[in-house]
Image: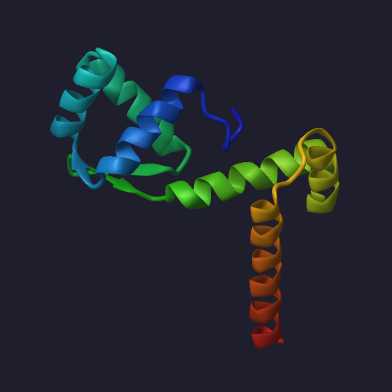
Length: 125
């Protein structure tokens, strides 16, 4: 089981928790019944899977976030780059931009991100 890959229902379930956490297990069961037509046991099984991946924690009947959605998505992106582009963001961007031209807004956003990175790096040197 790869830590940053979720099946479709695992992803939907994780999104539901991220949107509502902290949440009691009782309330989570009700939400899952409404959203997915799940039984209590299905909710607990899925919750256990995601707790084993350190996304969430079920402490005393309250589900809490251990890994934020943003941190999880960042790790997914890193894993994707490692698996497909030997960890190289420039190689990914080159491949991506061959098939889809970047808009001027996207180019400006990338420039802004690079400038922020350089500013942060300069402060830490």
